[in-house]
Amino acid sequence: MSLSSLVASDLTAALKAHDELTTSCLRLIKNALQNKEKDLRRPLGDDEGVAILKSLAKQRRESIEKFTAGHRQDLADKEAAELVIIERYLPTQLDEAQINAILDEVFQELQPQGPKDNGRVMKAAMARLGAQADGKLVSALVRQRL
Image 1 (cartoon, helix red, strand yellow):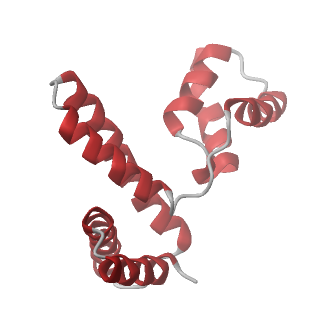
Image 2 (tube, rainbow, N blue to C red):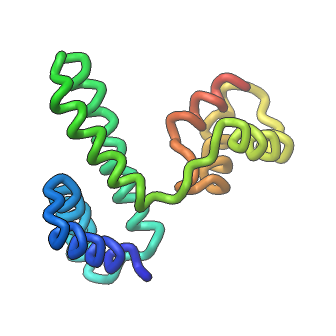
């Protein structure tokens, strides 16, 4: 089942259950996916759908930080609840130990000489990790090693 059809069926279920938060969040996801399809003039692939969901999740994380810093816990809680809903549709994220194991392989292959090779290492690491790891975490781990 494609991501768009999964979101559509879950939206129908949320509407029937009268779950306002889930309904509004799923409508947001559905609209983001449809807008991208219109821009591309073709159906989205799974990787493209996941990329959109990752950007929506990133927006929520940034909003949570800003609302918390601005002492607006009510809005931060709403964003956190939306983030949980969005993360249901993302692939499971690898933990730090699993990311480090993949980074070990990448470092073994590329033999980076220092911080100047950061871009090369990140490109290879993200190609292997894909949507299973947050780029910010991977970047921090790579910089730590270099």
